[in-house]
Amino acid sequence: MATQTSTIRSRGMELLMQYKQSPSVQLRNRLVQLNAGLVRKIAHRVSHQCSEPYEDLEQIGYIGLIRAIERFDPSQGCAFSSFAVPYIRGEMLHFLRDRGTTVKIPRRWQDLQKESQKLQMELMRTLGRNPSDSEMAEALGVPVKEWREVKMAHKNRLPLSLDATVCQQVDSNITLGETLPDSHYQLMQALEEDRQQIQRALNQLESKTRTAIEFVFFKGLSRKEVAEKIGVSPMTVTRRIQRGVDEMIAYLQPQELHIDS
Image (cartoon, rainbow, N blue to C red; front, side, top):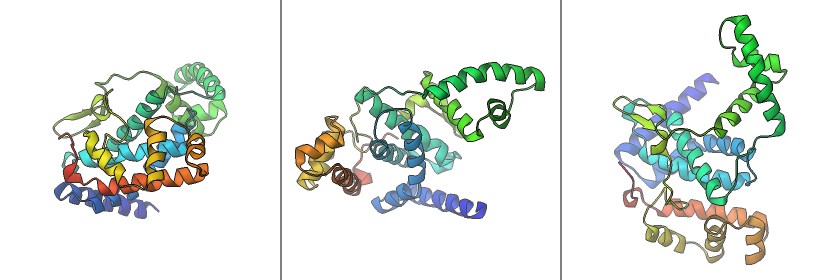
């Protein structure tokens, strides 16, 4: 299993190097597929902290992943997953801010966080060091995985400085501010800052698919509301959005994108 994971990572870095030297839609799509699990993992975690559907967060996450692929420099010695996570999560959080959605923490996790503060102090006095995740989980009587999720949820509630380093590179650091879209970004402007380019991509889509994407991502309607408006089921709306985003990604050529260097 470890060998297989190492092989996948090696292949991923090889593709990233190829993409840096000679970008193409085909290479980019392969990199998106290879790192789709990272998007799904983050979307799953965020979906438990807000009221937005997992599917919407996943689609938004792919936009962040593509931004990361476009900006990643393999020669800087930074792991791609570490580089990509802030882009993916940042895109989701920006989407939640636009929708007016607040990140919420389950009551059980809030209680565990409060209890952990006292237990952590006690364990520090006993052990003479900071307790490990496994030691904290045992003291709280919960699985290690859940304790880590509690920590992550609590951490994500706290405001972060935009100057905070999220990835150290050989000749520079990537800060949180550099990974987040600015306040004027619209959805999918991670691919293209020129609205006309996005509109051209939208115009390539079948009418109902284009309408579904515009209603959900630009006008903030729910999938159920869109389904009623265009006369299809919510599941069909989901499929149309997924297919439409894929078609738009294929249409937008890397050399035409307005990417910061």
